[in-house]
Image 1 (tube, rainbow, N blue to C red):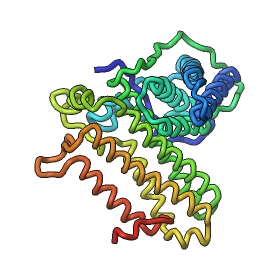
Image 2: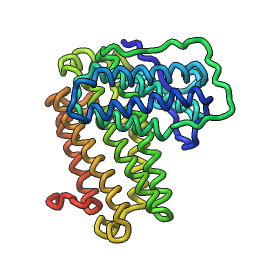
Image 3: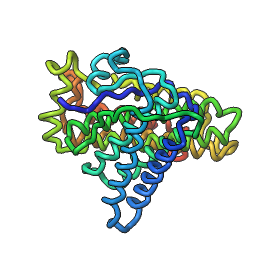
Image 4: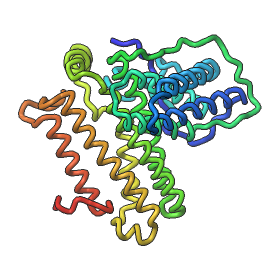
Length: 352
């Protein structure tokens, strides 16, 4: 079906700083700077440097990724159980409690493939910037410290480089989507932990979470950046029997469930209406507003993806009597907006 390799995603994310040799830290800084420059160029009006900036960022991330792959051993995927039947093997992912260094190595691998594929993608430039801004935040979050350790490189690892294939894109960009969901969840949990004791720290965590939510929305759009006919004729059949034992569905995704559980916990801790919270902690209210608006926009963009790729058809798990995939997503969006109404500065009062 595809040659995209497996990745191992960390959960929980420890939050501890990875430690590498000084040379590896230098490569990390170079990669981070290259992604910064790519975001800057894409956000400007001069398009002449875009191709060069994309190539530079891809090369820098690739050099760092190869170095990390050669020096950091991660659990073999064959030794790890699939966290969710069908989903985990289909998308070629495993979960484990990884060390900070192992998580950093896997995250860079995922981000390199995603940035490399963006060169071939059919994506609106502001969505490209949103996805890259999330990638940049993950790099900053995982920025390593230099320590007294040796990162002697082993044999050159096999290295997967995307070439724009649509099936590969569907799989490898889902890796990025899942990674960003988990990092958003970690920030939401951090905000919930700090909400009553350190409102400024909680607001900062929520601001980071809002960036990551926007980024995983962009990753969702990136994964489906292909002609609808290709999705219908080639990709959709891989998610149904006989290609897989049971129909694949988004509700199987443990990464997004972890994100939604983290958001639910946050709102249980920080449940005051917007006006009340803004009166006491205006920065915290504004940051929560950004998170909830980004979350609503995520499902709204999901509706447009379904409309483009599936049209008026049902999802793979909907029964014949059910509405379309789009109508189901619209109902989910409506219920979410109702739940957020009083928590938002501009909640939708007409919903009743």
